[in-house]
Figure 1: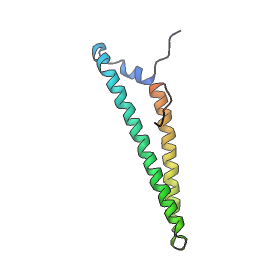
Figure 2: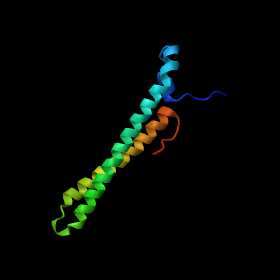
Figure 3: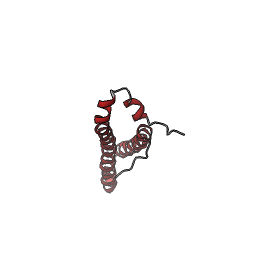
Length: 100
């Protein structure tokens, strides 16, 4: 029984076999770095927005509810983005994304 190919393998098959053999590991590492970068950017935004929420809450007398809600929404959007990155990574490479 043959192993089902990942999306990355299917997409990469269009290249010449020699080029493919030489460049595939580089292309795959490059794509994985792009996924890592996107995930890390979302994590950075989450951290920034959680800090903003904390700071807003500390100043109760000057607290802007719209700022609180905007920060909460950005956090939720970034969490959703990270979930989608994990799904795309699994589909592209056939392995679970690890946040390391």
